[in-house]
Length: 387
Image (cartoon, rainbow, N blue to C red; front, top):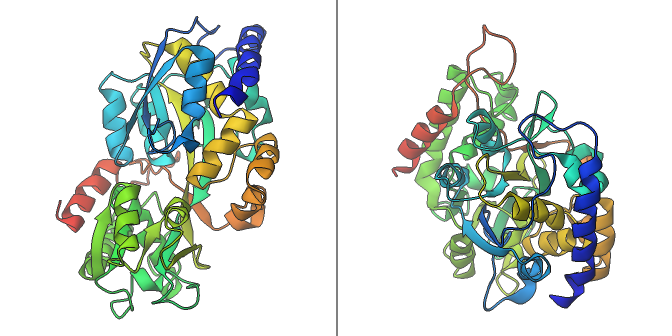
């Protein structure tokens, strides 16, 4: 597995040198890629760059080390708030962050603009993933995409013979899963409650963007979550926690990722995206403003979106790759992968709200409008969960 990356790594090294002749360079971004420093410290979603001693299917990190001489040290985050805190410690060169963290890191000056001319594989990235508001500010890019996916409903097939078509099973106090509902332990889940409000009772609170909520909308979402708390059996942080609880039959329905279903092949569980709404993620690799190893970080950002590597990484985790070239590579490794994850199915994503950062200015220019900040979301979530 490591050997197969050698040729690709040679191309990456040459391309990074040639790309330095690119056009405009964002202020604060590198103008050329430094020599590899021999080490790379990353904050990651679990599995994105881990090196397992028992599971070698995530060896794109090992292959990167072999190709570049950069030793990868990956620290998994519990949730986006934890990821932000870790990067702000100054101990990491960068990491993978979802949309509920990216704007906070950009606004805080914790991450640097990226010179995309130095990342040759970015040219092949789907146009729909370029210049997105969760990682681009005033036209300035702050990273490259890793993969994207929808947050799905994980359910016990003994309890639910047919795939649920709505999210009722995690909200209804009379749900067959009551008392054994598993919910993602992150304040960004408040957006799921806001979408529940948006899609029921004729949207009586007038929710538009579930991540930008005024006080009335926010209070209604919090109240809904407080009611839901009575049927929640666990708030999961690490994916392994939910895998364990569903594998043991302790949980029967919950908000999840396809990754969990993929890692429970022998349990009576399945995953589905209900018809009423869904949240999702589009993750971005970002470089810390004061990265100690920028040469290794830029090499990593190009490596992780190279076709075969991105195919390996997204197949392993259970998400859509970022380019057609990666989809083509994935077809050789796991036929039907991009179809299964709807990588090029625009209709599938029409009702998916990708995680974004709640902002007091409502993320718009209407100064008369005030929304709840992410600090408000964090404080409310702690109160909801009793943490």
